[in-house]
Length: 450
Image (cartoon, rainbow, N blue to C red; front, side):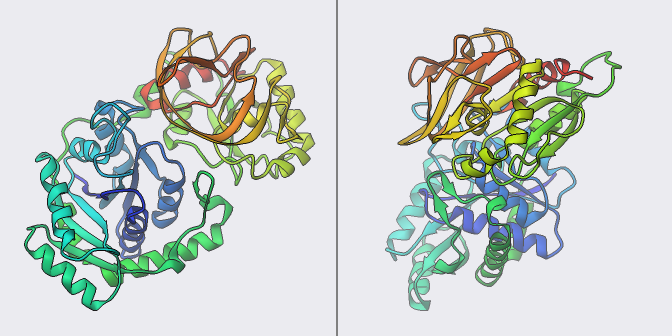
């Protein structure tokens, strides 16, 4: 049994990341092994969680992976830890659009049988906070709202009024944090700036959050609350059981995975599945490495911010040519979102790898949301007809948006084809979680040269 807490809020912007990351860092500094988790598809917050704990930040997404995998994936990530802290997404009851509680923080809290600590932005209220907390605590009796952390408290007097009001609610207050704008992490067009782009400053920010939480929160009380969570039934998810290729004794192919400041978005389970399927996984940085790792037999390029680094990526002509040559050779290449842009002919007028006969540019329009998808073409990831769920999150446009052999047919919220399949290249805007379909990793590795 792993002690665990879910950090939720009535709405976005209330301070979930501040409190969750601060708790992770504070408990880690106290000597506990802390497992960090994030509800939903977000890639950026887990980077800060990893910095706070020294362990991979992991996502728990009941839409992408299905409700039945949430607890097993949690148990896998939290194995051997003293405490797990799960940061929620949006408002506590906000989930996949039009699908009830699915993928909401409340849904995941129920699947984990975990107590919830509600972070409330108290900056513009006093006694009304009790009505707000009462409403969230009573809305779904299966969700155990077991405590409150007050954020953006203005003064001692303000804190006293808030605590007095909440005494009547029956939900205990585990902390009160004063306004501290200097701890805020910078944001831009897709949210917080990732840790990989500002590591030194991020280390300072996380340390400041830890100090702020230690000063303002009852850590002993929160740890006791986390330890009150009951045991979870069932076994932990096992990448070896999910993706291992039976009877395979051939040499391990080397799969290169793009990393560094321009390519920061990746689920930890993807590398674990590739390894379990028989690959040797080797990271490389397209901003600095002029060649792919020696012996690369397959290439995975996940999400990130190539638009921010387009001049630097373009200037690395030697690596761009190496990527194009690998794709031309027929080696498997899987590219998601940022990877799609990197494989394009150009990005905002800067030459990219030229694997795809398509150009990309920044747009004012944000494309965001869950998608239901069906593989249109046989590819190195999946045979045609394979159904998966994914997530789009970008402010760029690819022209054309699909090749002669599209990658996916999307069915919600609109019907369209998207992405490119050519030779053994699969390139798409769609982010998917391979734990939901581990055959993706197995099929990819089987397509790699030894």
